[in-house]
Image 1 (cartoon, one colour):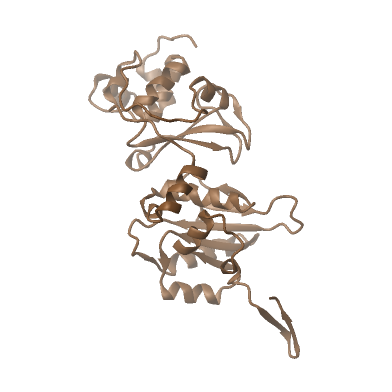
Image 2 (cartoon, one colour; image 1 turned 135 degrees about the vertical axis):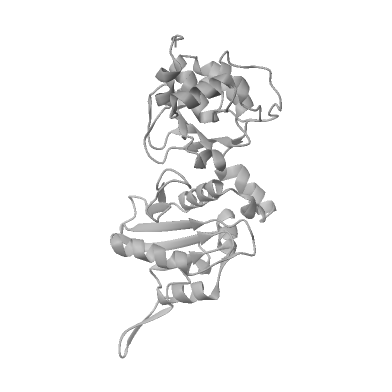
Length: 317
């Protein structure tokens, strides 16, 4: 890419901020979110390899780079090429206050990721690096450490060795963890709303069986993250999910997943809504992370015996 002479008014719309805000970033009065900085570099015409080198310094405290497989088609935020469903890609995802402030999520294709060597195993990550972009706003972003997170392996190992890690995950990480476990069960799972802090219509994840399964159905998942391990989830989220399912009648099952547990009122409400509504808590997640998806506990909403009419019953054991 060639460098282009552009004004702040030219770059600001593509970055997603006002011209005055962008000018204040250039002057050093304010800081620009890392993902917005990458977009500014793209508009200026700086090569992606230089951008990737600088991300080693900028990503960390308020962002992370996550390696995953595309749940649906995306477009590379830098080169504009297509990222097909199921293809490996890298996602720059802000979290916490940065995400709430509207910093965008960026997607990088395999070609860009290979150029940056992001698809390779990462060990001995540098804590400091003196490489900088020749762009004024780069020096106003605090240098931090890059972290590549593959939810499916390192995180699962950490949780197996220390279950309390489930309480230390951010809401975004916890949602990605649940998504990954549904994939591990052999289901096709799709995130809704583009992230934890985005509008999702009351559903975080939609799942279906694989196409080879002879009886297709749609399921809805609401993920409820709790920082306090002693905090219990009440019945309100259950009522909300049932309301969403009632408004969208193509859902055959609903699931509430939390990293703590549920109150007695919530459990009683779910019991009266079986088998449509299912609760999965901390204990269930520990089974999931151990790849145990066939335990009898997964069938607890299904009765062992059904009486169809007087004198006619069926045992399901």
